[in-house]
Length: 140
Image (tube, rainbow, N blue to C red; front, side, top):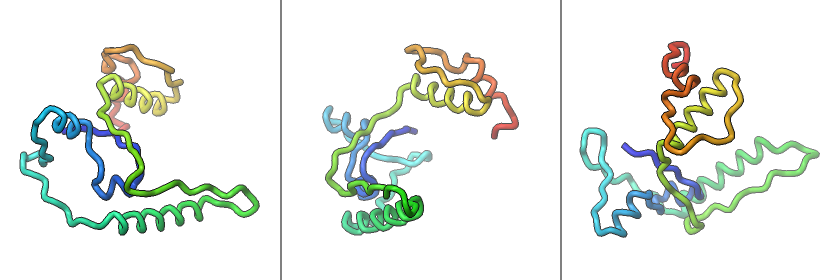
């Protein structure tokens, strides 16, 4: 199982016009890449919707969101550029990043300040707040 972070337009994401870090690595190193289910079965191709249809749906959603958060008499919210060509960024978080996300969650859960940094290769499960959160039966 993999966790991929994607930062880019929703149109590009939902049009499947992007590659994960593992896909890019596989292509660069002449390996095949295949998405599979937890049972090991190949993921079936979804019904494809054209990028133009995806963009239209995303822009409609964007207009609704901006309309809902805009207030009369205030500066209007600016829409963002949605298309299927704008560059994107993707990567897999390392274990330090996973631990940092857990630490942020634990700090917010218990009302503690979030540290500005964490050490490289830290054992995050030994951090007292993360350990507390992992054992806390009230936080499910």
